[in-house]
Length: 355
Image (cartoon, rainbow, N blue to C red; front, side, top):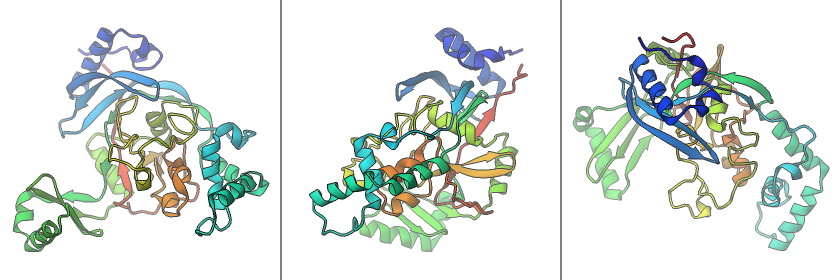
């Protein structure tokens, strides 16, 4: 009979185990939850690390073990001047959209700097930024996050794979592929209908869009023995209890390669699209928001659907929504999922009475 002492699945106890003891524990989890153990690995990011295991489920989904913990989550901006939170470069980016006439090309660099300085001294502007931070970030508190097996990456919604046979037999789709090949493009999409994409030099795949609701998604997930993470669980998975806006600190580092910021000379190797300290790939893409679920209520984490970026607000405003603690206070969620922006991540809840 497999048995695990539950306290060893939580930090700080888990961190204190030897590597051999961690391996034994992680092997036992694989047996209890009928998972294939792919590898053991220590994942490192943003000066944090976790030694854990990567598993694969019977339906081909990769999971990692995330130890539980008692952590402080959320942020308290009360009585904290912006100058104590952000550096000068990020502050300038924050006030820039408030500079009158910033969209016009008549301002010299000297004029821009002068207007930014004036904006930083404008109490009304600073108050607006402070209100945004207060209202769009979750409140600080201490929480017990239970041990989880967490899907390594996020899954898209609404899109259903097209079989190779069906793709070959459909003349309309084959004509679309032929035209795309002629134009030298590797993907063609009809909005909320079909997406055809090239996977190598000669092969194409496809997927069909199928509208679905949040409730149906949740039921499908439950029917397969999984759950959605809660808001606070997702914050822990994305930040490991960081006490800053981002897992790396309060400021955007402008040497980062960030998605949707082509003028930053990105080479396609995006800084944030990598395994984090738990071995999870968190989107860190303002357009890709993940669905979380708390006792009958759905909400989003990890993005605002690109609203700040699309509004031309720049890098800092555009990337604030990827903070573990960002929560869009104006977001209204209806019944249907938006397959273009909404993603999800499965979790397996580890039973505290596990044997």
